Length: 268
Ligand SMILES: *[C@@H]1O[C@H](CO)[C@@H](O)[C@H](O)[C@H]1NC(C)=O
Image (tube, rainbow, N blue to C red; front, side):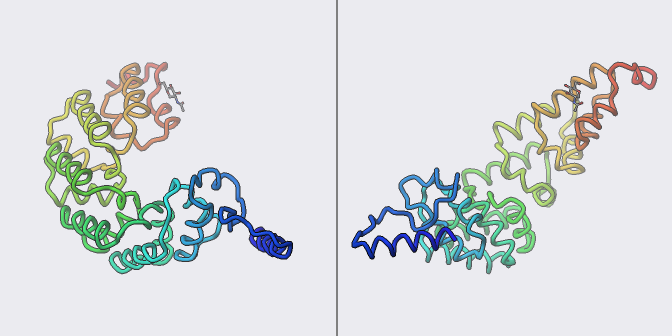
């Protein structure tokens, strides 16, 4: 509708002998997505995205906004889409999810940047093609991580820190791909230190906890572990409850650890 309007406008200008400047957007102005277009013509990348992924115009504009002004070349975009689809056997819907979540990958060289990183991750923890695809679809951001400088040291450190086998490391990644997106220094390491310090876990106990519940690695130290530990201490409840009930919502957790009733002192 709006696209037609701008075509009509161009026709009107042409009829009036006016030549619109090349900077005039070909796509309709469509709200917040346009604000971040920067120097690049608004809608140019969105058009490429829409053509190659068969998504809606709105989805394409949103993806374009996430490119922060980076432009897309249609042939590169086509290579990445085709490469990912062949390598990971993605359905059209999965490819769309991956590319729209992580549109910057559409500007990469598939053979040089993406394929080798996929293969290294796959080999590092022994993923089958289908398992690799599962990880990427769950966390498309993995495609944007450098293997050598990011994933490899992270996996090495986690494996060493909890004394896990490669098979066990793989089960953690498959269960919680988001672990790959956590910072080693700012997130994973402080959390493991916290577990060991506060709950007095040996490395072996730490390993068993993490393998039983890989999601333990993903909850927030500041917003989840620390306030809950404080509540347990106040209630006189066993601290391990914090780990065992980490998946509870705050409301359910609070209800399960009453602070005022003195209930815990009866049982402890
Ligand atoms: C749970 O309890 C903590 C204090 O122990 C409190 O700060 C927090 O707001 C409570 N959350 C809910 C959802 O009840």
